[in-house]
Length: 292
Image 1 (spheres, rainbow, N blue to C red):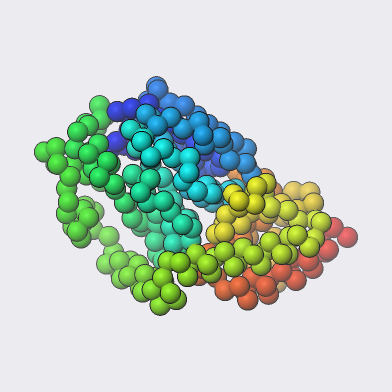
Image 2 (cartoon, helix red, strand yellow):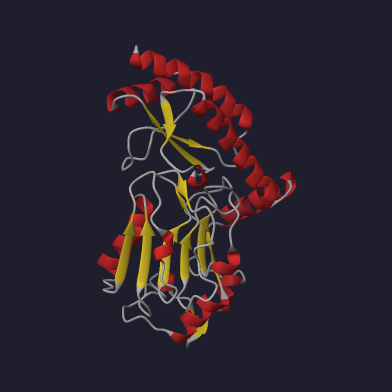
């Protein structure tokens, strides 16, 4: 965003805390004026058809703190003039991505692949490279954000050169994670595994009347960060989470601090369906304990 935004108006689609954080960066840090904010409540998705093909679009593919994902890329115009800038932190390797419609994609090694935190990947389309080489922002760029020199892309960034040298152990950790994905059958197998985990949770929720998905639309439900609400007070939800922790059943299972009270269960491909199945009777028990 620091390197490319400002050349065109910007449409920002956000429906949870991290997406709203990008809007804050755009309006408060970069101080861009020509910005359209399309906001939806937790559990909902904004009207993506409002994306203007002549504008840049900024959005998260998967709302980690709301459990709401973009279902597909059909809303992105084939004839778009602007760039699509997508935070896909908890989506790549877990959800099909329409790469031909995405110009800037970032994702971390940590989320879906279970790698070391604090590191990630940026993927640029030819259109994004063209923007970098033809547009210079009016604001100063920190060194770590600079991807061009003399008006040309610094290709070494994408060939192994480092700006600030990361831990090479982290790089090896990422390679090991990629080898693991390859070993289970590749990206499609990882996606199927995550979707199967969601199916286990869906069967549980549909057979009980006291627990619901935060995401209203089934097509928009995340298969990595599954967010659930309970027919319980906020205090009861906290008590349930504490019980699960004390019994050493589940840790850090509570909803994100900005989200409605509830549970957030990771269902990415690094999780085995059998482990989710083992958790579910404990949810029944803990809910009965805090609501009796």
